[in-house]
Image (cartoon, rainbow, N blue to C red; front, side):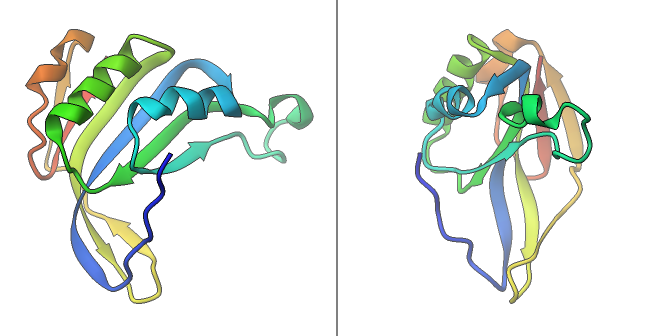
Length: 137
């Protein structure tokens, strides 16, 4: 999986994909699943060890992830989304989201202008419009 360097002191738009797995996956399996969409920064969301009494047991479980980065090839991203929806994924949220990044590297995401809910089979209808979030469930 490719990771890109965060550029500081910048504003613009980036592809933002939130992936919710049908059930928590082991870290390695979650990363392998996300290989359907290469070239993006990956943030795995895992339960905080102090939030769960059985933290030792759930520490390696990943319920969801976020991928961010520039939109390079819309057709390639749609193919990756379709692959994800055919596997361990419960739903996806995908869109081109505005951001402001400070000189220190802190990112502030702009609110979505509009949400569009589509069936899992509606990946081809994702238009990658700036500020529009598509929910595929």
